[in-house]
Length: 53
Image 1 (tube, helix red, strand yellow):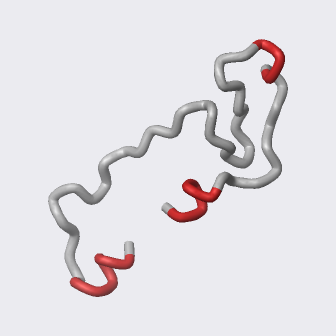
Image 2 (image 1 turned 180 degrees about the vertical axis):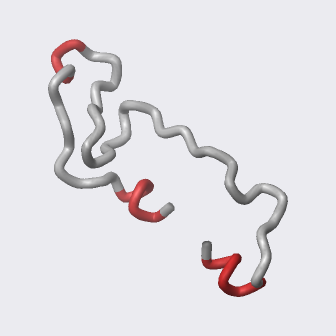
């Protein structure tokens, strides 16, 4: 959204959904990495890459 504030208009790729695999910590969503042992793991903090976006 920084570009929107700077340019005042949306570019062609704005609004494209972002998919986050379940091996990256995202607050409020299960982070299982495909392992049954992590089935009930809900991280308390977002991963760096999630905070950056």
